[in-house]
Length: 535
Ligand code: 1PR
Image 1: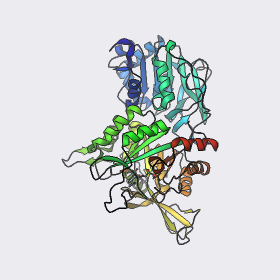
Image 2 (image 1 turned 135 degrees about the vertical axis):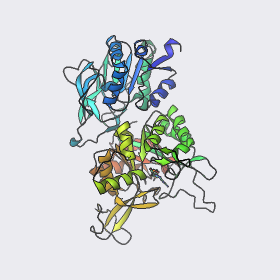
Image 3 (image 1 turned 60 degrees about the horizontal axis):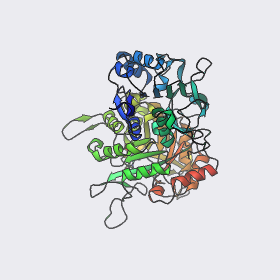
């Protein structure tokens, strides 16, 4: 390694720091991993992307003698950048599974967001900052959004005010970044904040003299509604991994050949959507329920390649469950998820397995901690676990016809039915289960899900708009963020779902793949309608 192009990275092995590595390499730097406390003391510049939970992170730092080295390094005003938990650990203590003692360099206690004031927890998404004058590495952000994902935050006080370089408002006004001399830490994720985030890293890594201050642009003021591009991926009949798209989950052409629809290559399309301004990209491995995903190496490869050039959050779903292969080797769902995370995913999404877990939880009232959802959220945090719900609308004559949550529908059914319930399905919509979307959403929230991806089989691929009755029902019932999905056909459908429901994000597939509407025009439309988006 030649001195100036090397960044020392403190990765204590508790989770996925692949995106930070990718961003550092993308900016032209080499990475030296910290192996011993001396590596910290000898670093020219150190990046500390904290992942996982506070207590295990402090345990590792203490046990490896790194806590002391970090304190010495920071007290000597050496170039440091902490990210997310890498900011929180600098404080005196955290309430996360605690109180747990932190490094104690900054006065204050890290506490959980309060969801009782109507704000979804975790705080997931693109938010605006209030930046102080001498923030330095934040100079390019100006009035643009950066990406946050966390349930805990540090609060400003008289005792820590000298450290604060920016704050962010989400229910509370919390500390978004700190700075003292050459020591910086940010609560948001620069490696997931697109161009704006890369510029934060660049400002930390490059000598000040090579940087100029950019003119102010953008008008971020609060949490933005997210626009997500979704890629349903599967192997076609020729054995190639393709992006496909169904009509009500049927992905085969209505032709004699009955081929799987091929709408493009996953890595290329994801890269395109990133450039077009997608706030997140989701991959759903739609045949994962029958194929074992770790046997599906192309999908892992897709994630690896995509994450090298796409610096917004990536979600991957499909086939996350326990599995025993033909040789009798058992893989836990946690191993499957870990492989997805190692390959570049920021969040994983669980469909079928979450339905079984919720059914069991509702039947027994016991949280076993053994379901894929519980295990993955315990290890990686609930912000990393999305539950994908695939419901089908079932019309009813009377609200008393079923034991599940029934709503009065805006548009009556084919026989004039005024009511409906939303039946959950598994295996890509192939099997209906005895549980409704409402019951499922409430149960998975209790089991530790961080977000809900709410599809609707009836609306999928129809281009007639989201199922507003369903999105309203679910987004009013849980305090975790809800992503509305299925049915977007034009920009108006996005403003409609944001104006009429509490959805935090809206996801679309077909209209983007077929280039009917560009992501930027959806966002331009939302902006004109007074809905905050990241431009
Ligand atoms: O059950 O954990 O293996 O996960 C399987 C995952 O694959 C689930 O998230 C499930 O939603 C998804 N899936 C399974 N089969 C299909 C299919 O289409 N045959 N795709 C499928 C679901 C729904 C959305 C779609 C939106 C927007 N796709 O992701 O992208 O409906 O489409 P639109 O904008 O074109 O209307 P597991």
